[in-house]
Image 1 (cartoon, rainbow, N blue to C red):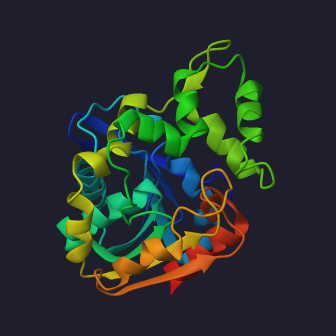
Image 2: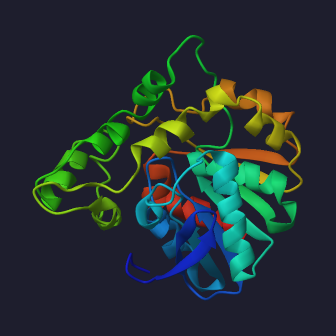
Length: 291
């Protein structure tokens, strides 16, 4: 399966229409939910590895990609409501939810609020709240954690190649550059040269990125009430290909006793990006979905 082998569906949600990608025609439906500065194109490698038994549906969350024009409010509850609207509209469920990075948090809230729609959660380097430093400004924290991914939202680029070059030097992608990454980045662009820019709304990213500070009880409360199986897949390195990873053992350990039916697995030689974009990570995700 390639990046081109899918169709778009527009689903009515609060404020307009949510753009949804759909891959495959298999009898088992999987909902893919992307990360905070990403788009539905980040699910392409997983779709390829799922094979003929599955249909993967993945929305552009509001403020991103083909849903960029949708207004706020943003936040995990709003995104979960949009995902529920997608599943209700397409008449499917319960499903396996694959949540990449921030998409894991969305999946947790969705499963807690609509347990009828979710039979299994696969959290991909996300979904468990991280320790937050005290007294740090929201925007400063978002900039520090996301780095180049959020920096490019306020920039313009003279050509598609200039945008690709901006990402080619990203430490997490240098050694794992692929056609999937290029397709994802081309989809992300809007406007005309020499003033191309990302379709991702910076306001949406900042609102979503700060939510664990603004509403610290939302995700922990949802995690404690989950009724479905939860598998967390963890990278060995972080957003900038650094050690320690986003989710070292000491961060995950307290959640083992708090989250019912929880298990986790470390995916060797991956970082926060390649655990989804890389072949090893995408195959591991697909293997757990099929189980």
